[in-house]
Length: 358
Image (tube, rainbow, N blue to C red):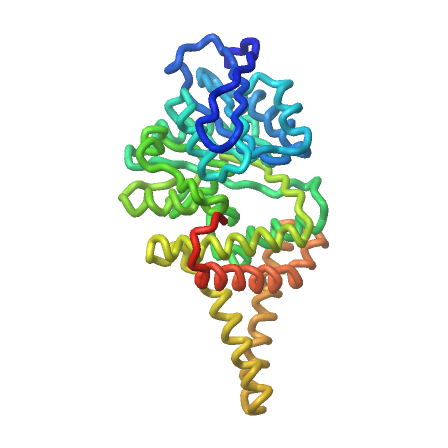
């Protein structure tokens, strides 16, 4: 990747938000990039430097790429950290993730668009692996993604949550968190680790109204039009999520609400597991109420509760076998919290009638 001296330029206020752009002169023409890597940031001071360094230090041969970061109006040191590196920075406060992804595509100069989150660190061969895979893929394969693995040097609480979500019982087998061990076609790829053909993103845009689940939405629309998405296990990023349990539950609640919103938008179940937590929560509360009125319902309530505890135990064992970490025993507590919170968020999303941003 060619490196030039950064220069700063202010643009006109094209939207209702302030935009500051630090553009980089790489010494290449507009069409000389093979890939544009887009990184979304917001108060990412804990991880952004490691993320950018991992992208600059990619071990690639004959792949020319640029790095574009789109910031949602960070209040911490994120922007000051980015100024140290030769990357393009666009600051767009009060905009959604969907809007910023579209803006990144519009400003990109590569033939392919790669996405990575600001709290992810890319393996040295990440970009080369993704590019080689999509270049040699069939024409109807428009996107390729890989796993976002659990780092060992994160707090035990978050480690337990992340390993829980990498089990089938804890994730429903979604490629967003579940770790497959072989190449396979999937219905969605998480945009914390993905590459797309730019041509497809110019006519199938992200939903500007979505701040969560925008990748699930666009992947669903692409597959419904006959395009295919591919998962490859050797395109690796390490996902550093510094969340408290409270923050995690808020995130899960938003996911549930957004999934309900997408189901209403497309009038279709886009994830087979999406309504299950809400249905189970409704059944449990109904049986609990019946048991208070009629004791004959108590045995059924106990059997279902025991079945769920066995389910949670199986999830805990699966997570432990993946991690061999004692902190994973917390999964037996976190799993019910995740299901209850997600179920409540999904229910709220179904009942909500406004178009308020997620």
